Amino acid sequence: MLNPPQRKNWWVYPRIPAETDQALSAFPDILRQLLFNRGYLTEAAAVEYLNASQPLGNPLLLLDMEKAVKRLLHAIDHGETIVVYGDYDVDGVSATALMVQVLKTLGARVSRYIPNRFDEGYGVNREAVTVLADSGVKVILTVDCGIRSAEEAELARTLGVDMIVTDHHYPKGELEGAYAVVCPKREGDPYPGKDL
Image (cartoon, rainbow, N blue to C red; front, side, top):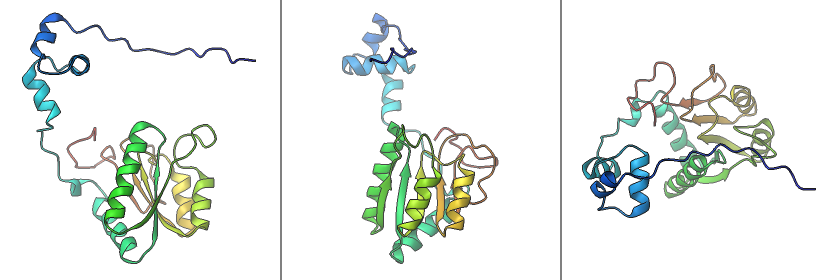
């Protein structure tokens, strides 16, 4: 038997007006529409956005960043296994791939873990933490998840695994079991780019 169709909410943007289309004529059609959808209505504004000319803040301003970096460097220097634990959505998968590549370039023993969204759900889960700890992992580095995984961070700590949480979502409570928590939306975090 077929499942009934799910109700979906579609965002349909209006077509780009002729005047804006002309102002963005230096760009391909699809890019003009996307720029319009995001509110970039002139070529100058679009070029500034696409060239990311806005200066980024110092990453060491993020709370726990220095602590996280030192722990990762220690793991690399001592041959400890690091697992990058990413979310299953596009920013989680992208962040996982990028972080694994960076850590490999630095000489880390690193692998990745992306949970099955249907079986494991969103965020860090207890079963995965236990399996990773049992396999000898010493550091779990979350990307795009973990900010609300207090129980899982505490479990990792009790199993001898240091969990470093890097996330951009809003926290809910403290992550006392985590080794480090890097999130621009933490209360009191001085990093200027809260929407990182």
